[in-house]
Structures are given as C-alpha cells and as structure tokens.
Length: 138
Length: 352
Image (cartoon, rainbow over all chains, first blue to last red; front, side):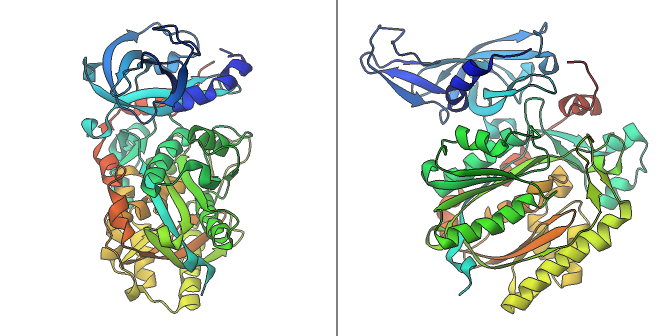
C-alpha cells in the first residue's frame, strides 16, 4: 500500500509528538489538531503535545481481516483512549500487549512505532501507538 | 588538562523490547548443540516487536536520556545515531529521531557505521565537539535490531535494544570523562555486503585477532595515557557479544569478575550490538555511587575499540529516578515462540 508523500510529511509532527489543539474558550482538547474547536466552534485554539501524557483505555476493537499492508500486525488492535490531564480522545493502535491483557480503564502510555510499512522498497510511516505502562507488564 | 575532562554524561537512558526468546527454543529449532547456550552464558535474547525498529527503540532510549538530562531539546546540537540495522539504507534515521524529539532544525544529525562500535566513535567525537564549544549538547544513540542468518550461530545472541547518552559540560554531568583512547585496524572478522540480508563472520577469528586484540589495545592505550590501572576502577564494561568474552577480557587486563558483573546484561537479553556495552554503562549509572570510576570499552568488528575512563558525580543521584532504569526493562518480559520471533523480525519471506 502506497501512502501519498505530501500529506504524510505534513502530518509527521502531529503523529510523532501527538500534537493536539486545546480550545481557549471551552478548554477542551482535540486530536488530531484542528484550527476550529470541534466542540464549541471557537477559532481560539492553542497547539499542545500529548506525548508526555498517560491515557486511559475507553474501548478497543480487534481486526482479524486486516487491510493490505497490515497483515504482519494481525490481529490489529485499535483503541480509543482519553488522556488523563487534557481529556483528549485519541484513536491509536495498541502495542506491546495481547488482546487478553486489555480492559476498560487500563492506563497506557504513547510510544513511537512503525504505523505503516510500504513493503521492502517504500517509505516507513512512523506514529504513535499506546502500550500498557512499562511497569504494569513486568 | 585533557579535553575530555571538560565534558560528561548529562543524561542517560536505555530501552529493551518486551519480547524474549529462549536460546533453548533456537537450539531446538536449528539442532544446535544443547550445551551451546551454557558455553555462551546467555539464557534469552530480546526481540523487537513487529512495529519496532532501530529508530523507534532509539526514540525511547533518547527520551529517557533527555528526561534525566533535563535540557531543552532545542539546545541539542548533534543527534548521532550508531547502528548497523538502519531502517533505510539511504535516508538518515537521525533526522526522524531528531524531529520526533523536537530537536530540529538547527542541529547536526547523522547515522554512523562501524559495526557494533559506531555509537562509541560518535561518543568520543561528541566529547571533542562539546569540549571545543562548537555545540552545547550532543545526543549519542546506539540502537540495533541485530540481524543474523537463521540457523547461524549468531542467531543465538543477535538481539534488540537501545541506549542514549546526552553529552554536555562537566558541571552538569552525572559522570564526567577523564580520558579516552581508540584502537582500530583493518580486520575481516564480521561483515555484510550491500546486497546481503545477513552478516557473515569468521567464526573463531572473531575472538583473538578481533575482540580481544582491539579491546586490550584501546584499554592499554588509555592506561598509558593516564597512568590508571585496573585497581583504580570500580566497574568495567566491555562490549558483550556473549556472557563469556567480557569476563575473559577483564581477566586478561587484570579486572576482577565482580567489577564486570553489574554491567553484564547479555546473559538476559543477548547482544544488542551498538547498545551492547552502552546498556551496561547505563545499568551501572542506575546504581553507581558518586566518586566511583567506570571503564567503558565498546568494540566493533572491522575492527576497533575505544576506552573511556568515567567518574561518577553527585548529580547521578538527582537524575537517576527521572526515567525508567535498565532493570525496569529487564523485568518487563514476555517469552515468545520461534514462529512469532520469525514473524516479528521478518525472517519469513512474503510477497508484500
């Protein structure tokens, strides 16, 4: 699977550092970032990085019929998480775990991983996945 | 005063993937001599997951090092990445790491190549550029998802891990450098041609003329330069391709086994190539007391070694708990089968 280079390049910082926007009016944070607050419509937003924040697992899905390019990651586990301080909702792959270890409320942390690998000749697109806290899987 | 004495390790950090395979499992798969793991003194090796590579592991090690350093990423003047498992043959890994950590754009960023010693030479060079005042801090990283031909004896130890060091001025350092020395020759002990997936090696040739000669050469050069002797050191960390070589080279040089064991992690995770000696140093910094002296001597095939004399300062105590320790990663482990390891490390040929 080939990903168009310009959009991947333009979004690299957002993907690497989990850059979100926080509304100065209603205070809510949104990921991916948007110049307009998706909750109150305000255009007064600031950019913040969520990469240092832990998050709680809200829900997840397990994909057995993975799309082209994701076969090696089967089963693909996608989660929706809420960051603990800013309360931003993030959808991201879950990693370093097995479906049996997952539960609602599980505390997780963001890590940089290979999200899409375009075979042996194309680009590698990096981004954030969430894993259970380091010490919780000891 | 040597230039080294103006510089030190301001932050350090490592990363080890969660997944492990026992050597017993590899021995059973390929019909090796069941005694081989005992001879190598290695029980398990770490395996990077399917979504990991040398860049992602370096990112986490570097984040740990930056957390301990407590410096603004924009003040990092060089990101030097030592690896022999670059995800791209052409396209720097160092820029991906620098971008992800917020270091870009006003910094140097380069990948170094010298088998397992690339990060070590980057470390010695970083001392020079920091001592000269050209840059304030350098981020030096050794990270590898070491490759081995399936069924080759190398497969028993070739593992995955990363270690990062932030080098800066001595006043801010958790440990400062006293002196350093290098020893390199043209030695064909281990190599990989540009179209080869896996490296080849000279079997027994990797020992005496390569590992032992170069490490001993570098350490003796350091001793000659400084007048230091083995009894002056509290710890000794050598490149650790297996669990036996570091102990044997220590004995030859006159270090007791007790000074080597605290930094010896290969028996638990295998040989992580560019992180091999550096993760030993990282583990020692996690536990050493101020005033203690460490000998660090990485090695890389081809071949070369560098020896560093490092003295721990009071600042080690306040930095230590700011990031996960090597022990935390060693304790986080999950055993996997040979089949899963083969999938994670892409040893199975697929059309993609």
